[in-house]
Image 1 (cartoon, rainbow, N blue to C red):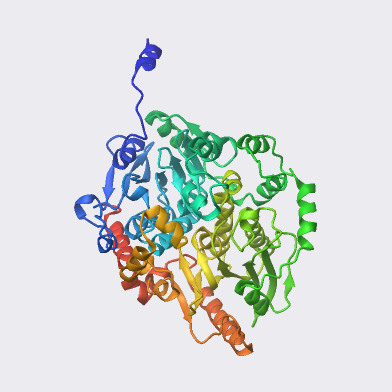
Image 2: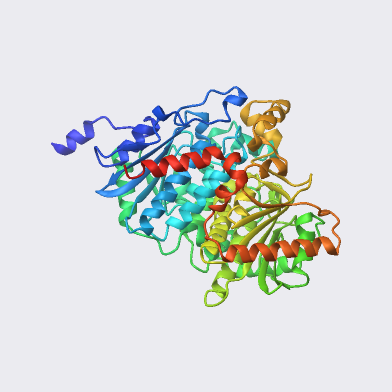
Length: 574
C-alpha cells in the first residue's frame, strides 16, 4: 500500500522551485533562517548605473539552519535574475557565508556548507567585481574542505557556467547533478563567437546536452552522483555526501590520474561523449603512463620561442635557473632565487604545436591547467619538511581555451586543478605571488594567478584584466561595443585597463616606471626588489585573501563587498 501510494504521488520538482524554496527544502524542517533577506534591500550598486533594475537579494539566498540536526549554511542562486550571474553583492554573500562557516569550524562548531548552483558565471555587467568574488569563493571552498565536505548541486536548466564551474563545481568535495543540469566553463555561444560555428553550433542543443549534461558529467568522472529532479532524492543525496566525510583527495587534486587520462586521448577531432565515458570507466591509477612519457619526450624537444611578455619576463626573472621539463611546453617552470629566497617561476606561453589546437596562443587549456597543478604540487611535496619556497605565477594569458573537446574533457576541472594547487600552496605556507605582465583574462586568470597571496601588476596599457573579450561580452549581454565602453566609464569593474582594476583594491602594488616590453637591467632589478619585499611581507601575514578587502582602495572600490560581510557577521549567530 505504501509503495502504491508513493508510486501514485506527484513528484516534487526541485528545479521548478525558486532559490528560497530550494534552500528551505534541503534544510531540516522549520530551521530556515535567511541572512541579509530582501527586506534589507542590499542591492547591486552597479546595475542601476547601466539602466538595469536590481533585485533586493541580488539573486542569491543565503540561509542558516540544520541538516540532520547539524549546523548548516545553504546558498542558493536564482537563475531567473541575470542568469544567476555573480556580481559584487551576490558574490560577497556567497564568499562571506563560506568564510564564516570556516570560522565556525576553526572555533569547534562544525557547519555543513551546501551550494545550489544555477549560474552563468560572472555577471558581465559587473565584470571584475564578480571575478574577484568567484576567486574568494574558491579560496573559501579549498580552506573548508579539510574540515567538512563542501556539497554542490546543479539541477536546473540554467546549469553552472563560467568561473563558478571552476571555483564552485570544480573545487567542491561532492557534486550532485540532475539530468537537466549542465556544467560548462565556456558557454556555447561564447565558443561559437571565439572559435566559429564549425567548432560548436550553439543551436545544437542535443549535442550540447550530450557533451555537458548531468548524465554525461557523472559517467565521465566530473561529478559524483546523478539524481532525479525530486526534492526527496536531492535532499537524501546531500545527506549521504556529508555522511561520507572528508575526502582524502579531492577530484581537482588528482593530477596524475587526469594527466594519464588525457594522455590516452589522441589528436583526432571526432571525439565523442561515449569515448570519454568509456575512458573513465576503464581508468587505472597508471592509465596511459607509457603514452604520457611519450608525450613528455615530444614536449621536451618542442620549441617554446613565443616572444610574449610572459615568456620574456619568465626568463629574465628565472635567470638561467633550473628549468623543469616533463609537462606541456606551453607551461614554463624554473627554480631560481631572488635574494635569499628559493622561487619557482611558472608562466603560460603560446605553443604552435600544442596537440589541442584551441590552446596554441597562450590560452590555459587542458594540458596547461593540469601541468600548472603538477608543478605547484611537486614543489609542495618537495618542501613539506623544510622552508616552503615562493611560487611566482607570471601572468600573460589571453583567456582559457574555447573548444568542443575542451568542454567534453573538462577544461573547468583542469582550471580548477591549477586554482586548487595555488590555493593549497598558499594555505600550506608557500608565498604565492601573481606578477601580471600582460593579459589576465577570465578563467585563465582564475586558474593562473587569482589564488595568490598578492597580486602585482605593471602599470602599462597592454596590461588588461577582465572576464572575456568585448566581442563575446557584447553577444552575451546583447549590447554593442560602444555600450560596453560606456558602461566601463561608470563601473570600474566593467573596464579592461589595469588602472580601473587597481581601483577595486585587490592589487598589492601597481608598478610604475617599468618598460614592460623592452626592460633594461634596472627594470628587472626593480621588479626583483619588489618581489623580495612582497615575499617578506607575505611570510608575516595571514595565508587567506583578506588583504584584498582591507586595503585602502578596497574600502571604497569594493565598499559593497565589505558592507555585505559586515552584515553577514552581525546576523550569523542571531
